[in-house]
Length: 276
Image 1 (spheres, one colour):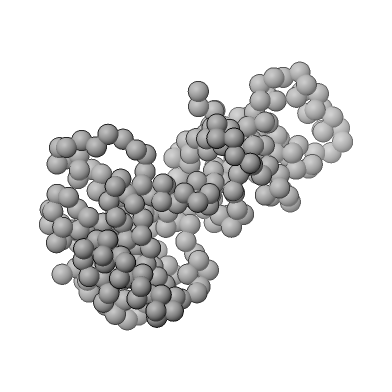
Image 2: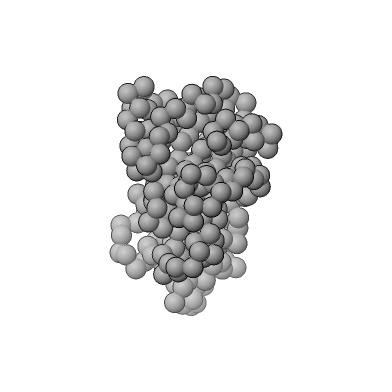
């Protein structure tokens, strides 16, 4: 059974674990733990649910959709308990202050992405793949949500170090081979942006390439390409998703998007340089 998403005593539990309660409060809570099995069980879950969490994910609190992350928190706790992995108690991760429920939700996402399974997160939940073209179109739309959720963890510091020319060329060559489309000239199409490397991911069995750029005015911008099995031609379309501006289109058997916190006009202009 999936763990409860939140508990009315969550903040007090973490304050107890962090040693933030005064002596009367600590004694009172310890007595409750001894007499309330449900409260004790909740403490055990939260204490063991923080494997791999990094305080570097602090910015996620203001960006991530809470309803979705509440569900991920429950999954993270359940997965950590079932897998038997070595865990780092939450109190070691934030020694200076108790976590709010929102912070614990953000920590759950960090657990998913920092535990060496970023590709699993981008892939999304495994499910039987229907053969109907309409269903395929829906999964293509899902990839934009997956990209937005992953990109929300990226800051200018993430992209602070540019790859060497040799590494950049090797990354672009590998990405081009996986997609069957030449991406080597993409950085030159964006002269106002600094290229910060190309990464390969997997989204439901399809190669997903993310090329990272740093805009001196608007921060991180990504250009992403994924195979489009429907081969539908879609003109550039602008939308807002999870606080990001996204310009997406499809051509030549690939779906493509630009994502960032830049104004729509900026991303639309960039899309015009590669959308043909």
